[in-house]
Amino acid sequence: MISITKNFSRISAALGICFFGYLFNSSDKALANACEENPSSLSNSCYITPEVYKITIYEMGLCTSDPLAGTYVNSSDDVVTDYAIDESSCSATFKNSNGSLVNLAGGASQTLTGGTDIRPSNGSYPHAYIKIKNVFGLKGNYKVNDITYYSKDEGLSDTSESNNAVWDQNLVDFDKGTSCEPVEGNRMMAASETFTTGTTGTMKAVLANVSGETYSATSQANCGTSTRLFGVFSPTNPVVITEQTNGLEVRFTITNRGMTVFPGNNPYVVQFGGGPFTPSFATF
Image (cartoon, rainbow, N blue to C red; front, side):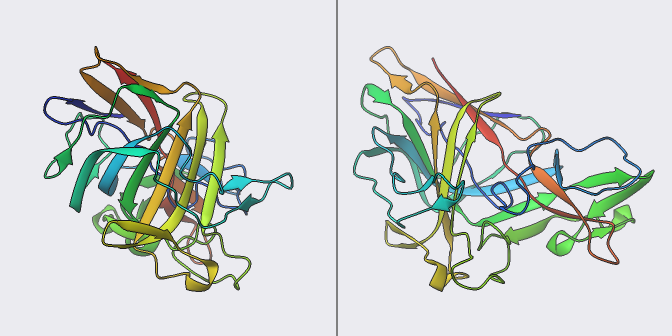
């Protein structure tokens, strides 16, 4: 777990959530389970805690209305989207046009640097948003049948620890991750999932491109062109800012969820991909 804490008089950016590959993988609906310790074999995907988990944050803030209201799960349990991003009710708390790189692994507290920090107006905010690069720096390992497999480039694995390295995962499709392999109409350019245990609330995201400061959701036809991800978290209880609020602390948890382990394709016993983290909020 990582905690980012800021005082509003210095910076009000201690707020955010993240969405990325495989959290909403339609072919792996049961990904919410943590991996078994040292199983004899691996038959299903599961979550582990990564050694490295890097994201680049461009902007975070609060909203009184859902900026991704047209992205949701329908009655057939499918994610649908109108590709609309409406920031009209949102107030930024942190901006950095160059991006602030953060490693969420290791459990240490850290700050966002190099950006502009804004105190939000007093009020009740049912939604929080984040704008991040759609590239994630990952590293991890997992033991199967007493053999440790280390992640390396492109999420592949190796039994030699010397080949264990941070690799960048470029998310272009919430289903296939780094590939636009599905035909148009079967690509997942949006995602949504509701958490009912732990930190509760609904996560949603769309892949996006940016022109100036305007974010536009990426359509299925333009899969592969995304440079950003626009995410929204709607916690069960809204974030409330009052005159007495000096700051906002956000804790990000990646324990047993920040990296996904997959049964590998021959010759790989296991392969690796991104996984989610969840936020919780506390004002002070």
